[in-house]
Image 1 (cartoon, rainbow, N blue to C red):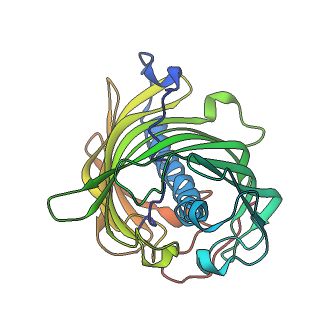
Image 2 (cartoon, rainbow, N blue to C red):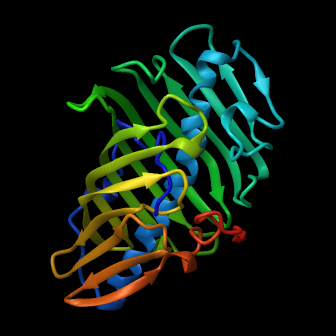
Length: 301
């Protein structure tokens, strides 16, 4: 169900949001926990949207000449890459910076709107083992959601099955203009991505990978441990993970988000304190404007 992860906030960030590492105030109610499950899915969707762009533009470091700036349809980056994004590359050798500028409002072919910019600093081509990429956002928003991202991604080579693996450390804050800080979602994660296919191409439509990891998610004064207890399967054909399980745990409560067994069906099962309900993924803000099995996207503004 969740779309492919890309550079996916796989940032081996050197700094960690200190607020995420503080001991939590877990005076939460069941209603709060259920909301946390929905916000976690929303934060995951925000990461997914940007990962698609990042996985495509990382190739620009090898393709573009120093100081080169490109705008207009970027067919090389795939049919879903925002045609209004401006891409520039600095430096004659590594480390090189690739910057993506969305301006005051850049809409991709699926109706998803970005504003602001992203910076990628690569110490080598990310296709090479050991290469690292640091990602930083600047005045970034997705739809009507402000989004702050700092991540570090490292190519850690191949696993025993010959699949490309990436180590990612990400720190993000997802909010909405006008919301109180207590409603923003602060997320710090360390993850592993195992590519099944699509790593060597900028077009995200052929992406398929497994994602797993641990971290913390905080809303207001309430903090939860976050862990992938079953690897998330991400595919370019779907907006949500096709399968996998995420567990959110505080000192008093536990929430399980189960994305199912491989179908792109817009549903996840949430289990909280023994109670089970179906979460409609397509109704969650920021998620509902993303493609699902070819359905017409709805723009959330």
